[in-house]
Length: 388
Ligand SMILES: NC(=O)c1ccc[n+]([C@@H]2O[C@H](COP(=O)([O-])OP(=O)(O)OC[C@H]3O[C@@H](n4cnc5c(N)ncnc54)[C@H](O)[C@@H]3O)[C@@H](O)[C@H]2O)c1
Picture 1 (cartoon, protein in one colour):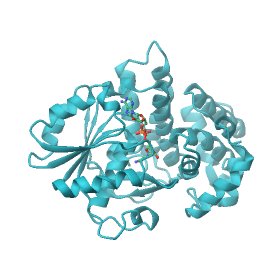
Picture 2: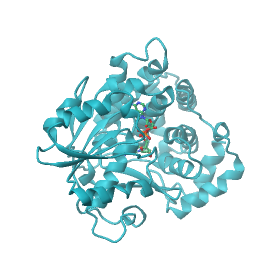
Picture 3: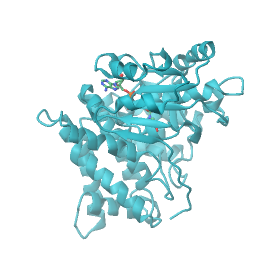
Picture 4: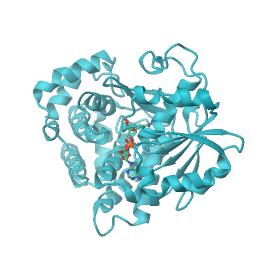
């Protein structure tokens, strides 16, 4: 296991009707900006609960943060922040809103000329407004990590800082009942692939991290399809297990002291940036191809793929090649059961689109991806071709 330092300061309030705790979590004298998206929270009772909890606070609101939040929208929050002296952000929504709030928090106290430099020039974040989150869509883990992804002119770029970890997050499985099947399947698949990015690399004897990761993968495989089944989809225990799995998948715990991949995400971001495909659906297309390209060599993913086959899919064949074949096929089958695509052709992309995607990867400096930094543009071409 590699060295690590662990500090996970987000206080989690899990369970039904926990939204009211924000009244005590946000300092009484704070000037709060309630940040949300397109208004789904006004149809499912979440807005009323939040407003009720903020009754004794001074608060303002900023809405309209879109899925895959854009710089152009987020930067508009700066006026209201300056005008009212906002000093606390409350993000209420899915990953896009929480990510968006993080950019707003960093931009508000950014000392350079243009906050976009945080993404394009990786300008360091030295301070940020504090934020809390009420999560409405389990998927990204953004509610308890310091990561964010923001898009400008089709360029979808990540940034991160420990200063952006929410101080608290409310996870009420009941608020996920208003999600569409598409959002549920996207969330489960996104969380699954977050685990894979931190697990399916090479062995460093991180036994605790591996077994946590395998437990999360098994839970998502078990519970995900139930959340799409008409008879079980409204079961709060199922929703709760999915919600907690998604948070644990990317709150930093399982990635401690182990190598991480993230190539599927970086290639996937280009598909969203260029073609507007849902984040999770880009991942379900790219991951199987990454597994196929990186399965062969002993020093790549071979050993971990065998472990994945044995421990997650309970495959007992003696032949390692057959185990890996079956594990990849079962993963694709899981994605199909979750109703997400596994091929570029399913989202109407063809080999004619590949060079354009590679150009974007090059342009964004994504030329040495993966746990060994050896997924070059040529390897990405191989991955995209296998994903056709
Ligand atoms: N910060 C991270 O660590 C991290 C990790 C992975 C992905 N991301 C990013 O997060 C974004 C995706 O976030 P997401 O998957 O949570 O989806 P999202 O926040 O984009 O939401 C998707 C849709 O679901 C709706 N919605 C949310 N909650 C709802 C509810 N309870 N009922 C009805 N509708 C609801 C939203 O209004 C939106 O239209 C992408 O930009 C992705 O790149 C961030």
